[in-house]
Length: 441
Image (cartoon, rainbow, N blue to C red; front, side, top):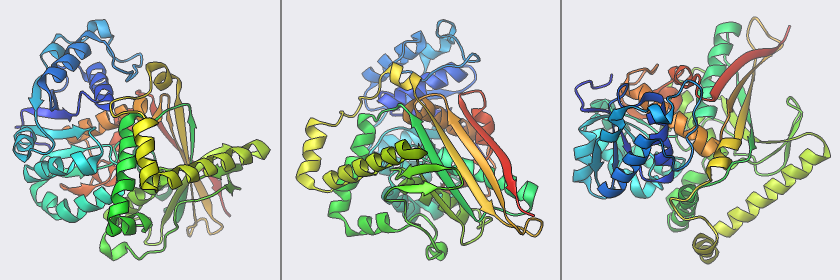
């Protein structure tokens, strides 16, 4: 349960970064300073003060986006001008301890997490402080599980990775789908397939930096390469040997949904997260449950061409990033710098949809059944929608608005927060729907 004796409900670590600023804008719009006790944290008090002044004035560093129910920038709480500022350093454990012990939840956007997140997680675990991030770095998530899961259970710290576009739509969407299947059809789905559609969108320098760091680490560490090659790298040891498929590598065709498909780069994150959720929830979907996802590119010749082009492009990029000198040249001369990101128009005009289709059979439906859940976002998935998912994940943890069998541990969105996150996101532009689409005899 949340610690109501803590000085702050949420401390936003990394508020001066591109994504951190979007989360700050969102929390200011949605909660102001009167509905939530929160603070901004980072390395530079001067830069934090500048962000605080801009947030209080309604000036945007990007666009967290506002719906009709959000506060108008001109009417923001006066208290936003007095948001507390906490200064720390990602490599100074003492300064992180001082922050963690004052917060019910630390919400962080500072990546690459393998570089900048390790000491922060350790501080939160030590002080029983809940934590949420946007990490998609599977090798680092494995590290935090091995080093902190048992201790976090003892201290009551919920460490929840992947609270953005990776992996909330996949993980919470699957939980919603499976809950619907069990409640209405009497059995969970044996397999769930996710097809992702993205309109517009762009990568920030921070996301690219995380990708480059991953390839650098894999070059140097055989164990990291082994983890990345494992289809269930985040599962507990007892379920690591269950059957599993590797993420899609080339063009495919989904007959059920009548669309060509291409590999989806985030499948390498989302598939292990959903698998870990099933394991942590004690396999309610079965030990052989499989989750997979890909990009939907449409039907006909056009869909096939788009799938081929995307598959080829991803393959070429992966190949380039695997070559050290070429990777470093791209990072230096081509990729955006950390702190840079898509402009306001790109964020606002982009959108996404994740269509999840689960199939299974039960005593009442021996011929099989199918259930579909859809997760939609009306802004750029990696920034406009992600800042809402992360912000509301932090609020769920801070207010104890969770459905979880765990009081602590290194968890996933589904196992650490659960379906209350869907309710919290209602009206924010991120929507979840589910329905039974097919029944057997």
